Image (cartoon, rainbow, N blue to C red; front, side, top):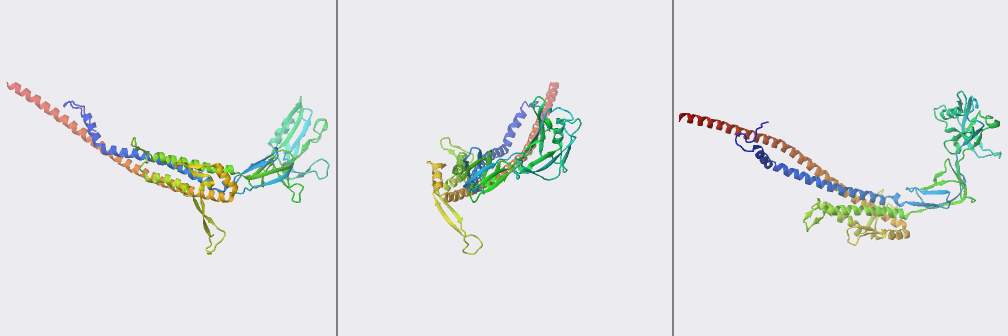
Length: 478
């Protein structure tokens, strides 16, 4: 690279002159950079619009979903029974009457002991038998236990204390290496007196166990005492010919009523659970769609507006594709609703259901209108609730159809914007490639100018030296 000291001979600021000439030379590249900045600003605006359109699509999809129109609310006549609507396509309205015959519990076995710290107070081994509990059949006041699977022997290390017993039980595993499903611990009730408690980790009659080997090891030779595990039981339609029972290992019943989960906490009679359509939840879906659509309309208006007073344009003011999206979205409301309904017939035997066109008319029946200035959607939840109460089936069909139409429109618009963004990014890449090429050309031109001015300084220096020599020669002749 050629370098020189400014004005060493000529007195000129050659670096400044070169910089000024390079600015002129770089005018083409500067224009390309401006185009890139403009395109990047436009992409940012397109992306803002696209985000709102995609949100509108998602909200419209929610409104058009059958599960949204199956929204339910559940109530219980009892404070001890909780009914929760889970919704979903399987949800059904209705009511159910039942008695809570029993609530679920896990097994508890205790051994009362005189001293929880005593050594050699327990046997060298005990055996734990998993099994199932069933209601007292012989009326002896004790539930019936049925062994299930293999018995597990547990060895208690020396010295055999209550702490060693509980630790051994908690770490014991069956033949498959699985834990036994119970936890053991000691509780001091007074001084060193206390109990050793064995608690099942799961509720339900099938999660029972029996401990063999601790008989007589309690205080005053007492045996262990057991509260058996039990299922929750509901007696449905009590006292009628259609009475039946439903059991659960927990206090929760999720399959008794479609779309409703029932939880019980105590035994009780004549409980009634009602499941009804939740029109307010459906209205919330429509409101969410209206809000999303209005945010999209606002964003489109912001990105395409033009202020005639300041003559200031927005990034997408001249973009017809974006501007017409506004009118297209407003049109789905102002034009009313028509949709295709599938019939159960196949008159032409083409293997496809026959269809008919339904002219639903004004969306005011769904509570949806345009704002007074015609630039936004508006929603009246009261008007919707009134229409839904009169004919829920027709309103559901129309609501789902409208949601589907708006979803399709928003999807088409979002795809169009995405294609524009892709095109602009391709354009920016091309422009940046050209800018990079300009960098090479400008660097070459700067070096050429630096060599040219360095040669000029050298030539001027030689001329000056020749002038000085001639002046000396002429002075010698005089």
